[in-house]
Image (cartoon, rainbow, N blue to C red; front, side, top):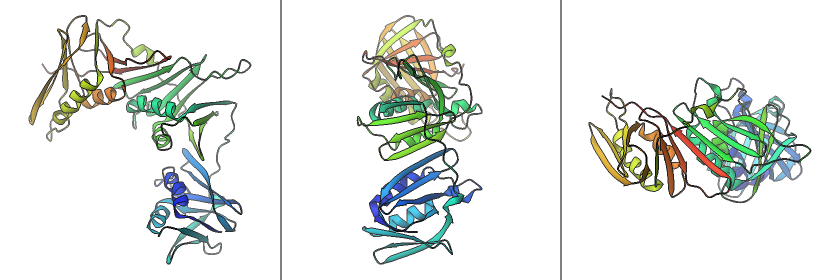
Length: 381
């Protein structure tokens, strides 16, 4: 195989592909990026770690056809180090050596036959819909903070998408926080074939997808298959295995009869929590992480945290309806929840100092809503 392509065109394909390779597998080929020539002017570039995958096509000059996998980490470093201009990738079929040439520079490494690369899943599905990049990015940013990492319950390590009767719910929960995004005007399908599905997409894939989407109105096509979800984003195709588990009955965790209702400036509260983290995150060895204490009383929110290194005290004016409540939280958990509220005003509902606090950004009346639940910690006696 021998192809010639501009350095930047190659980098735009192999750098994102590297995020879909594995460095922990016993299968050497999944550590690589697959180069598969399609015709005299096109090369397909793929990566697949057996859980999530990536494919795209680049325009290039194909001087000799071929199908080979090259170690991703080494190849990306080599191409980055080459001078700007045309890069040549030549792979010898007999000794499986890759020669990368750029300008007067030449580097060599090993390759693997492309026929050893794992097969991709079927990208076709009857369950398909489109969403703008801007909307998908907003949904992920509002919910990603509550996706668990390496939780013993596998379903919590992903983002849950549930669509039924045109209502889309996207849910994340890490055991300490719950985020529920709802759009009552979600995709509906057709009258003959209404669209409905429930899938859990791994958190690692969700974070990769964020790298590919921006704030544009360009459409992202999403196919939901039996065991995979496929995202078509511009010239890139990303696919992932779903987490095959039943998601938790998250609705039963949401308090139904709160006693105290608060409305406040979201930016002021977030800034106060950011200052409190200087105290709560800088713990001394052997000490537990101190909590941030929130006292809602007499239309004032008092935020304070203290440790051996110092203390912080803030007061924020609020609109309050109901009894006074003092409640404590892991400061980072609460701060990340407030960061997801990208509105000027936020509504807070409380039941007691031992039950979760619900946070709801004051959003425009367009059928979209966000509800966040953060569990408290016990105050020291």
